[in-house]
Length: 269
Image (cartoon, rainbow, N blue to C red):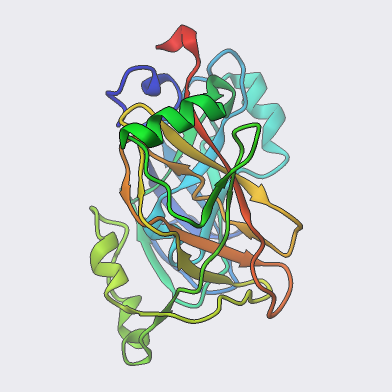
């Protein structure tokens, strides 16, 4: 993806764990993050800012599917601007049900600069859909300003009870193991309901993105739930998008999720 014209300036390469430990505890080469806990990780590399823009974080999908969110903490903003680099530490918050085994060298997230993209407008979206370069399911509604609204449809992924005791013994963050990880879940067609303080896995219908168009998730429509920080869908993606829905209320239907279809700004193309 990063070789696609313009995107190299917007999305970083994978950032890896150098050491990790419980919040406020000793840093080690490995750590198992349990549900409800927070970890602090020293990460590499540190990256230069682009024009002093503050980047956002997109958690790697296999990490997010465990219910784990990677983020900066508020006090780091001044340090980011003072050094001109991304922070050397991040926090990892576990909102899920399955412990996540982590170790040095794991790829946990990327940073990206949403300020460097331009949303596609409706005429361009219509042209791409007509040509077949862009495919969006019936759960996607394109509003008059080009903002995409995604309605969560009734599919959930639930961990297989007989595998719960084994899942955390594998280091799923090594390599690309999303497909194997999802084999630990059962896909069920039923209503999606939020869990307060927890992540529920669901998915969109089939999506196909053009090779130069990405999808940036924003927020939800009324605050009942949010899509945790696995926010960036790469250009050229094809297939259903797994959504990690974090609930702020118990037992509610998730809100619609807002997103932009985007290209690099003209000066980067």
